[in-house]
Image 1 (cartoon, rainbow, N blue to C red):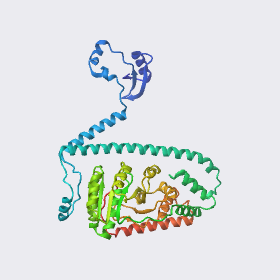
Image 2: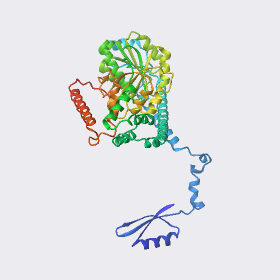
Image 3: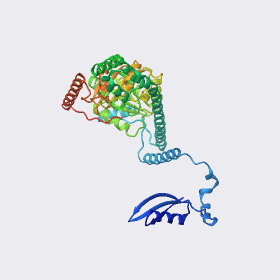
Image 4: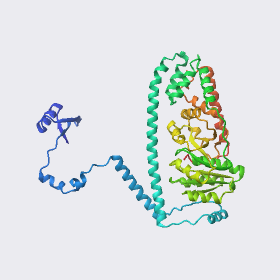
Length: 466
């Protein structure tokens, strides 16, 4: 079809003109006023091409036999185009800069010479460059597949929650509650709380007749449910930090390294980045390790990792940072090299239920502890609270802020419960009773005082989360 424009004095004249020119079946697309005239946009069918007019097109590739194959889907074509662009860009970079198999962080000159002697000579032949490019391409492909799988799991989890919510709606609607607790019930329904946990919380407040007592009951019940023995902070031995991409593993490694360097000395601590192909990941590890003065190494294969561990077996603390892509495979490689290694799961405090399920679904990973990151960014840690009520896994450390000194070694899970309750959609002083309002004001004052006190602490420049 083709669009045509008609101008006339009024709408009636424009319609008559359109019918006269293109027939009674003409389709009117839009009508508007232009400089005092009526503009009519109509759609008309194109006449079929004559053999003489179609001859130039018949000589092109549009009608060749091989072009009659089904056209690939848009996502396939898009993926092929992106892959081609990545390959071209990486090939250009590989011809300029060769990436060694093992790289070391910037250290003082005497120690640099010693470490350079202990590592094998790295090759810069074109074959090595092509291998690095292939590894980077494989990493990007695997990362894309895991993102798609995570999105599908999130959607499936939302569908399950929606169905459970429909089934629980009738039961919750028939439950008699005092009028003073209706705002709290609405707040619990509006918050992103898993359906099973929400049902238990609503059931626990039905015996109270005012909001302050109900909030206190929620705090006590959740604090008791998540209470468990705290795991030890990893300050000696060999430890691997794993978790989803973006959880803050590299920054957590830097915080643990700095804490151990203060206790044992920086020469007794070593950081290893194992098979992390992300752009800028190695530079971030180098900068973070330089802040505490510890040595950092990069291992792009299991053989290189084994060599590093053998040559530096005298270190009191070895921290291994692995990427979120193929996490289970990397953990299996490390356990095959060192059976006594301890694995720690790093997850953000606001992680979703699908993310937690993906990290802990593999029962072959014996987790030594759980490390919580981004406490300052978590306003709705309900999925994590439900996980802590179901699993017996001690929390060793936590972190907040972007400085390497922001490491919390004495983790109090009741503070996480308090943070979740404070961010319920029920914070207006007009609807809160006096006791609850006073408690909220006291918490706000304490928070302001802690912020003012933090300004007088010596600051250590850090990097953003991974």
